[in-house]
Amino acid sequence: MKKLAIFAAITATLSINVQAFDVEAKYAQTCAACHATGVIGAPKAFDEAAWAPRLAIGMDALVTSVTNGKNAMPPRGLCMDCTADQYKALINYMAAPK
Ligand code: HEC
Image (cartoon, rainbow, N blue to C red):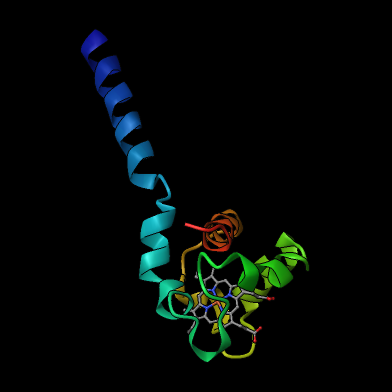
């Protein structure tokens, strides 16, 4: 029985690790396609000045923009499995200087 409990604890820890959201990796796989260079009018990542006017409209509005798409930005910003919280993390990541 004790062995089983230890096994269960290890499995639980592993699945938490698998599900942990890696903001840097997700940024590189999705948002970076446009935001790394700022093509087609995208606010450039890690450029505070580019993001200041965007942040001014509020985080919830920004999450809505990504989810629905905005002008040249496609819906979901190419991240089909991102949650609202993950979009928030990605936006905070891109809006801060690196
Ligand atoms: C295909 C290119 C492309 C990709 C991929 C992309 N974006 Fe964008 N994004 C844009 C463009 C272009 C704009 C500027 C839209 C405008 O205001 O005209 C933009 C604007 C934004 C804004 C500001 C929206 C607003 O209302 O001012 C946010 C926030 C944002 N992107 C987040 C993301 C996130 C998070 C990802 C990754 C999950 C992502 N984008 C992926 C092109 C892209």
